[in-house]
View (cartoon, rainbow, N blue to C red):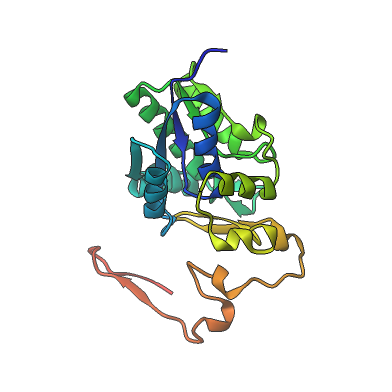
Length: 236
């Protein structure tokens, strides 16, 4: 197999991609370039930069893609009324083609011969990332650690992180792992897995980040007026 000299990693700064970063360095003995897309997820962007530096990354790309995300992906999706099974807004999946596009562009810019992502073998994200990348750069090599390594449990990931001095959020350790996973961007926030697999579980108050819980919502409707248009527009 052809040796990998340089790989661009889609990097969030979380447990999985931080372990992947170190694993790529050790397994492929290659330079790792990190790319973090700011699509409105909030507080994780700058911590990702600090952690990448700590892990020895020399080239760190953190790009504000919020405007492009909304203009070229979210709005067209709304205009097409694209809903999964006619009900579910594609809040997570609509961001993946944009991330794949920038991964490829950064790989071309830096002369990298591979890209990598942290999507698991169970989910659809690996397909979204990889088909998007292949469409734009057919000869790109994709390294998907979840299809290669033996770190197939949260406990093994934590042990690997401890062994290599990778800092881990305390919440990731509680009870042997995170209580659930979260995906956020300008359009939405969603949670899955862990304790949420039980339909009887009541959402925690901390899960309300974009809106407030129904119990804390105001009793009276509020009117918002857009004064930037020639004719004032209001929403309730």
